[in-house]
Image (tube, rainbow, N blue to C red):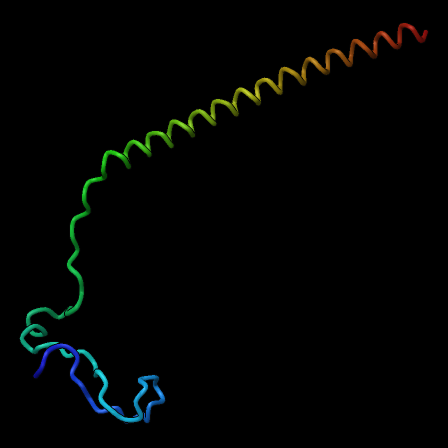
Length: 105
């Protein structure tokens, strides 16, 4: 039995796009019987162990982690500043209200 794609007659009349009204086309791929007997998963690729991550990838991951930590710290600082400013604004509003009540009496 020949290996690879055996040629078989084209009986479609050229409707499949081969450009010839009749001729020869490739048939299905044939696997030699001795290979099929050795390995039931013919054509399946062997799994190779993953190569270790290169230093550039590890460095990029470290930078990404440091960037996330910086973002979290900045966000916490913004929330704390917002809390302080809200309290100050409330104190100023309360003093303004007392001043307006005192001058209105």
